[in-house]
Image (cartoon, rainbow, N blue to C red):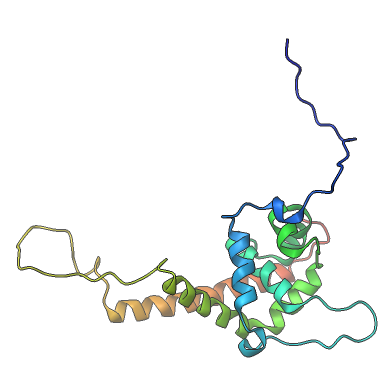
Length: 190
């Protein structure tokens, strides 16, 4: 007769678990870490803070990793990001067990809005360079067949420019959502 498996909360380890083992090799958090570490944050315009008295500030790359993970996971409120930094294993791994509070996350986002937009643009360039997105070349051979290819379903240069304008507009809306979430009263987490 087999025994049921129960949680053993008193279990101890001979060697502590390695933080690198918490997240799989193909997890998106690993891409975020590699991507942010490859960026030159000063060149992108991120605000640099001098270390004065008291607790040292969180590094820009750490906060950027949290925000990118939040965008990826559709977590846009700073209080929810703070909670996720304490609960999500992938964010625990990504931050090295650091969990900034919502005020720190908000200040970073508010001070670096334009730099964050540059990061999004560079992420599209990286995706295009890696072949994750691209333009498809269509060739014509003169064969006449009936197809569903109306003006609405094909994209031209003007359409792509309109699409890029919509992306900028959506980024603006996302920023407005973050600002609205920050203005909501609420000491409790949602």
